[in-house]
Every structure is written in structure tokens, then in C-alpha cells.
Image 1 (tube, rainbow, N blue to C red):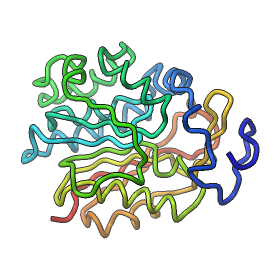
Image 2 (image 1 turned 135 degrees about the horizontal axis):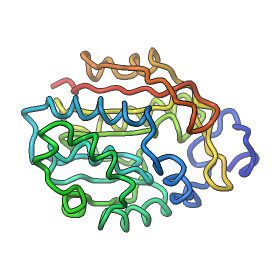
Image 3 (image 1 turned 90 degrees about the vertical axis):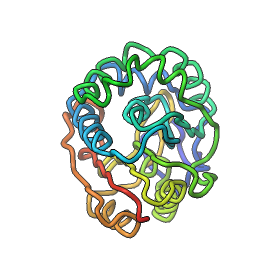
Image 4 (image 1 turned 60 degrees about the horizontal axis):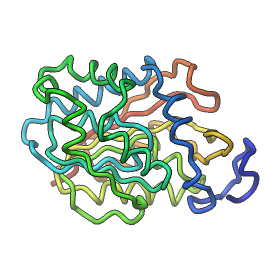
Length: 253
């Protein structure tokens, strides 16, 4: 990492390769971020659920979750639409965590699944553990190496804005995710709003400040009907951000 790996100061202009992603601590991140279902995450899950539950022309599809990390709820949200879900993750430590977690996911995810199953389409999935175990495939890879136009539906939660401080690299990450989806594919993207970076274990990781307007401008040419919403933070996660952003829509056909 460029600068102070253990410090709390972002190095302006630092890029994705400057940070020790293989040393990312998935257990610390998982316990801190998802040990309990916070109200802001509940709202994210509800909005992703309502969007995906309304998609009626996608089923038994191939889904993609990019930069999964220690977070299964985006994949859970895609279950009604997907017969297979690729969890595309760069960090070796996160890959190893995911390979274990998908076999029989932790009770941590039960409250998230309970929110999803408030819609009948999710109830039809049945047991979330067996569904994820059958359908999820963990792949190690960079967001910048995604193949083009391969997947039918996609999610990317807290990734593009949380891997770099460089504007061009943030924009490239957004493009790479969207380009990996087929024309007409439904997608949900979540971002931290105005993030100043974040600590995981002994390491500090980068972020670039974005807001609703920035996100809308980056997505509108791909998905003219994209919906972008601000979600207030409950203040319980950490300092150094002003809320969350959720965007959903369908790519141009």
C-alpha cells in the first residue's frame, strides 16, 4: 500500500493495486458489518427485494455478484431469478471465507433472508442455505477482468467506490460491472456515500467520495430508467460517510 497501511489517512491518487487486499480480514468485516441487521441494511435489502421480485421475465438465470467479500445478502436477493450465481471476488482471504460460508451459511444471514421472504417470490425458493450451496460458485478475479456480456442479472455492493481513491478507476469499475451483463439485464448497485475510507482489522482501505448525482451520471447512459436513492445511516457502522446509495435498473437492450 502506498503510504501508511495501518493508519487512517487516505493517500490521494492511490489506486487499487496499492492496497493489501489478500490481507483483508473477512471475519472482522463480517462481524462488524453484518453481525446484526441494522436499519440501513434492512432498507437496502427491502429495496433490492422489491426490485427483483418485480422482474418477471428473468428466471433460472445466471447471476453475478461482484466483489462479494463477506456479504451474502446480494446473492440471497438474486435467488428467485437465478439457477446459478457467480461470486466474483479479488481478495484471497475473502475467497477462502466465501468457499466455506456458501456450503452452509451462518445464522447471521437469517434476519436478512426473513426480510426477503416478506415477498412470496422469495418464499418459493425454500431453504436459503441449500439454495446458496447449490447455486453459488466462488470465483477469484479482479473486477477489471470480468468477461463481457456473460450474465443475465447482477449485483455489486460497496465495491466500485471502496477499492480506490482514483476517479478514473472508480469509473472503470462501474463500466466493467455493467459491461459484464447482457443487454436488458436487471442490476442493483450499492455504494457508501461520501466515504473517507475504512479500517478492517489492522489495515486501512481506500474510498472515493460519491453522491447520488455522481452515481446517476455514471449509470444513465447504460440504464436510462435507473432509480437512485439515498439511504440514511443509522450511525452505528462507522464514522467517515454520510449514508448509502442504492441504484437499480435494467440495461439498454
